[in-house]
Length: 371
Image (cartoon, rainbow, N blue to C red; front, side, top):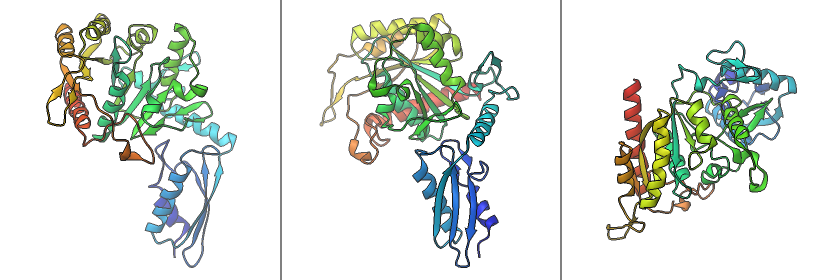
């Protein structure tokens, strides 16, 4: 016959998907009862009422208990009290270095410095930028991030394109972040943690902010979000060389950059400004991505619809590498009917393989350098 201890031991392996911590460690498993036929009932106390990942937690608990011999499993759900949430938030802040006793974090007034930004941080920052809009910068961001995640890397994305946020829609994210007593948990999709201004704007409303407010929001995305440990943080910057780009250069001096352009000579000419800004602020340019480089015809030949040579010319001008030439293509929406991600290319597709190769190249360069 199963015992309460058997159940607790088994559920130590089941984690809250947002916090990546054991349900037992978080004291979320309560009121365990087992009858002589190994029918189990228990209560799972969620961080908030209406937790968006309730169904996932329920399935994981049921599966784990049936693995150890439970016959029927009956779950009821509750939510933490205000006091319990406050205690959990305090713990998360401390673990993230945001509390007075946390490691790696410092407090300036009321704003903590994220350990991701600390001088001893192991997180690699990659800012994806362009000279102008419409060249596919955000598409490059989300596909590079998911390619890195497929390699087993712990990846976060900050949609720092405050005015033109599009990452949640591109990744098929419908839910909003969970907030525990002012600690924000990023939304995870395709094993990538995501934070975007789009989560906090109603009905796709325009954002009418000036420079100081933009900088504050970007800092909040670090100091108030519980990212956990990350290998890579990808930042989708606004096009051009405006306030947000300047804040990134100041806030994250160790960030590397990828410049996105199209093959057209004018697009490459404009993108050179973003590259020049990176060089002037001592940011290393990882390379150039030439998006919409060509259209792959059925017979295997290439049609260079937007011209050719812009990416290579830009890479030569910036004395860097042409990381990838990505063709025009439509992601296979049928690959994920239940949970579509309109801009994520399957790993086995032509474009998916290009992003995988680019991610492998970047990992080899950065991890050999720091290893």
